[in-house]
Image 1: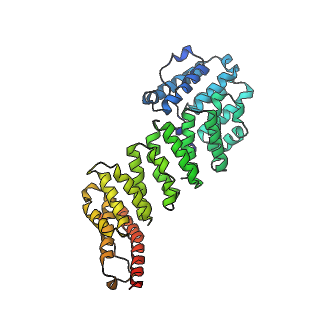
Image 2: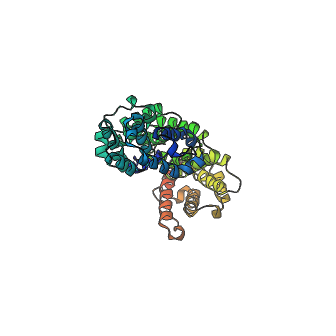
Image 3: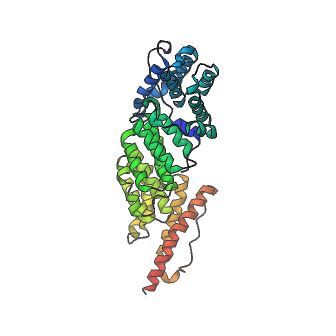
Length: 392
């Protein structure tokens, strides 16, 4: 998975704030401290804090606009304004602050760099933030800046971007900065095709932040990320994800395994498909759509092994009504290949591939599914026929 645009990365760092004292009674730095105190709650799944964030961020923006000029002579207050901005605040509030002339000259470039990052002006953001060492900043701000620098570096140097995410996690542990950095780093490890790191970071995320308000969407997308980065080449590489899989909730674990099983059945990696579908079936509710899917993918693998008869029986047990259109098409294709494999060796041309069944409802996606299934399965079928004839 290639790195997302800046605007998508900003979503990762949107921080919520819960109830606190009225903004007018608190300094900007106190409001920023309240915001950061709730990062851990949001990262641990506090939906009420997440729901409160728009109004609370609006209140902080109003407090910035109402602050007297002398407030900004304190670095803790200018840092707090940048924290607000990097936490999902409105850029216009900080632009107006700079236009007021109240910000000390020593802080202007830093603030301008943060604005450039937020609005997607990558060149200016790199020029103004690139040389900032997060380790020299106040810890309240350091992790957010390291995260921003990582986003800016991603298109230029992914290894440096990963190192900056590591730094962000070190500087801001336990909150939404670490949570967002872990999510992003998992995907970058996939880009690098670093299976061990991908699996380790994904496990850390599931263990530490499995209740985050962002966790379900992220964890449900893990299988797609694994497949897009082609991280599973064989059974040993699949087994590297066993610890990750065991750390997922039952529903997400089953979805992960079924997604892998289907893709690898189509890719001709039948050993992986068989193991993944078998594990999914152990936790699938009886007579459910997930059970039907698992049986289909498992049968697709079994008909190419000495368990052919069991695979055919399993295919016959799959109710098409439990499957979506794509899997109904796949079921037809696999049944067709199973019938082809049953033909006597002497009557079969090893170079012949069975004709594809007609697509369900003329759907292009179904037709593509059938083509993939036929290509993946019939190659193995032809090889099996050749081997059998050679032994006659």
